[in-house]
Structure formats: structure tokens, C-alpha cells
Length: 176
Image (cartoon, rainbow, N blue to C red; front, side):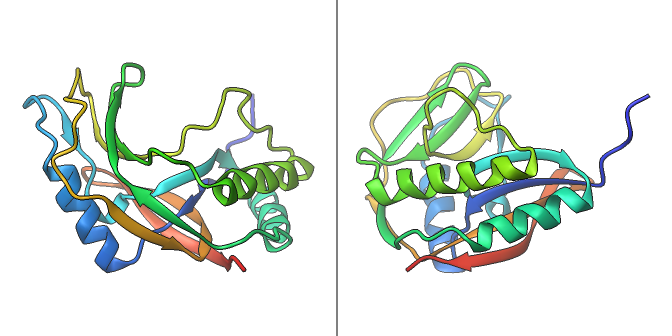
């Protein structure tokens, strides 16, 4: 029998309160069928690496490795919306992915390998999930582009909640 893991984690870009409210407004502008389930405003984020369930020792290793990331702060323009057929999610994203975001994702993934984490082999498509169980949405956004100055990244814990999950920032690290 496999040992139970202690905690469920992911690394993310975590928006501040003002941007989070603007992201929620943009998400609400997407017309969804009634069966879709919107992501609560408090859970909006842009995932860098989804880790999953790990032991506390693994989390300690990952926190140590995250401290060693030497990446630059950058401007992100959220100006697109879309839908992934699988896993049926609606998202907000960017037309132009900053090289600094690609570098942050790459550096963090490389560092986390020493903790036993294996980054996904498929290409990285940065996005903010705004709804689940979505069939389709229109391609043209009904919101003005949102500007996000990204100057940190965070390790986030997934906690069970009565209506799904809630997220808690465990620690964050500055970008230069």
C-alpha cells in the first residue's frame, strides 16, 4: 500500500486584490452555459507548475529550491480568452508570452527536479482558469486588456472546502 501524502501544492503567479477583482470582471464577461462552474475570485491565479500531493519533506525541498530561482520581474498583458476542450476549462491568457515568464517557468521546473518533481513534457500554455465543465466560448474577449506587473511567484496549498477547494499561499519569492 502506498503511503498517503501530506499536502497538495502548486507554484503560481498570485494576483493582488485589485487585479483579482479585474480578473473576476473579465471572467464574468465570458458567456457560459449554465452547467459550467465558475472559479471563485479568491482562487484565480496563473499556474507555473502543478505539483500535486507530496510529503512535507518534499515541500521543504521545493521551498529551498524556489529561493534559488533568479528570474526577472515582467509585465503581463491579459488580453485573450479561450477554452481547452480537455479538461473543459475556460481561461484568460496573453497573446504575447513574455520571455521572462518562460524563463521563470523553466528555471523553477529545473530546480524542482532535485526534489523529485518531473515537469510536464507538453508545452507550457500560461493561463488563468476561470470556469470548469465548459463546452465552448467565443474567441473575442468582451474585456479591455489587463496589465499585470509580476514581481513575485508563490507556493500555494490546495485545501478542501465545502464547495470545492480553496487556496492558501504558503510562501512567495520576489523576482528582480
